Image (tube, rainbow, N blue to C red):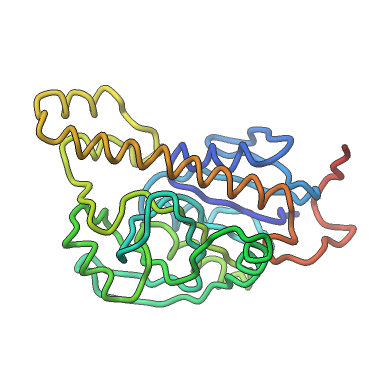
Length: 263
């Protein structure tokens, strides 16, 4: 039997933010864990690496679930969004390599939006663009912003397609990392291992060491990542503690895979 929720996150720090919000977490495979919401709802978490292909493979291999969640960081596309802002997607706009829209997939933000609004938790609701490549320049992000999306990332389109094909719900939870005017292309910025989502620290430092002119940009991005991680952790801790209701899911039936949480 499947789980209530499957959460897919590309990067190591994104997955850790989810896992730290859950109870009773246990590893169940390579970069795969199972934990529980505050009301006992079962959640499977996968750290899937970077990019659409990996996201598509991981989503296709995921167990059946009532809700699939694409969770992690994204780049801001519109002025006014700041690092740490939480975005709830109401649709996913798939882009090609030239930044042109190829598909649009509807997702349902109502559960999270209503729950967050009822507790005065600031979130923004809007479209999430899903690109096959990192948009490393401010100009590239500006071009992608013409599709009407608030933020851009690389994995949500694949997750939304699998949820649609399975007749399951889908939620997109993103935290702004780099802002609309921030270029993120500099030596060492590609030091994330695409397969594991882990930062290759030695490679990043070696690339930056001989290019002091880009240090301010790298330091700014590192600071923004700390802010984004802190805000994502705080939001997920509240959501996961509240349980299935916060995610817009009805109560479990007695036969659903879950555990009782006491205390």
